[in-house]
Length: 348
Length: 181
Image 1: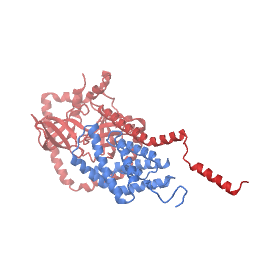
Image 2: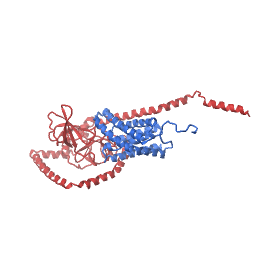
Image 3: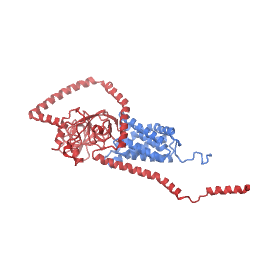
Image 4: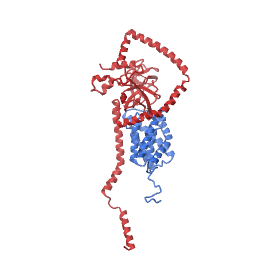
């Protein structure tokens, strides 16, 4: 048994040894260094990863879009149906509004449309007469039978969640035959183009998106130009001034030269003309043919333009260029002019 | 882990609600709930690494449901998370007004960066006034939605996390290592 004083001194010494900053083991120092370095390393790695993804995605988009990898596809597969269910009440309210509240004034609208139909029927009759007289009608009909474009009805289940982009999610994907680059339309006109697909969903870039550009022509004067999205509910048609005849009210349709859309699909109507800032070009503001903020049902044109196939699949056997086998298909709308164009673009 | 999964699920739910709301509201006037969750994670999350992975995950999910390039929102979410985490350490963001100002400023910055990235990667040009208009409107609605969304993150953390919830400020809270005041 030690005297009390000695014991106290020994305790004090051991405390002093614990508190003294002695040399730390190399392992501990290395561990601290790695821990200190880990957070910045992870941040840099994640920034590189995301930037790399953007570059890869940009390249894929330039080549007409991409099928999503399994993990991205899985997330889309889960969210697309759920989004459809969540949107249902909103859709119900819109349906009620459209079918009951909006009926005010429908009688006047009905009278106006009835007289317009009569005018169009008379006009149509004249055109048919002219076609029969020139012997073109039979050839047009046979061409349409040969190259009818299969179309797949799809439901819009979600709109873009960011204010800087304009895209929609539709409930048909690669298992239904939808591929990136397929045009999406309604009975009124062009909606956009499929940019990415999973098994049961597809992301469609709308015409309104700033990344969208479509080769177009004025139906009346055949003036050519490019239609671009400006992010809002209007489009811009940029055309070369020289020799171009564009006036307010003109219908603008796809030219078929971009390789994505067949010729003759309605894009919109010229609402005003503006100077483009340069002397060679002018800009026409276009009201889209389709109300792109309210779309619910669309049709995916299951055949991509043959020019697109020629551009991006140079080694494909020639017989495959006719496009995929019809997946669905009664075409729900008259695609006469589109079919005609597809026939003309087809390699002989 | 549970809290990370719960907040990720919350972020996906927020994206779905956003997608449904976008049917009725004009795009700039639709609050970015999923982005606000990332802000909430940046301000309140107790561990840095799980927080940043959560932010990237939610960013990629947003990229899937949006017309952006894959990785664009993920990159922006990293920056948002870092800015929020830094602000939580350096500033007193405990009140509603400071958080509102921070969210508004970050929304504007987020919009400007989005447009700059689009210009760089895609070559798309935006008129400055239009960017300002969209960003201001979006900032306004985000400020309105910020309080509830950040509180939601706090509640999920409180429900699932064993760790301390609250500001991660390295200020003394009145305790030392021995537990004495």
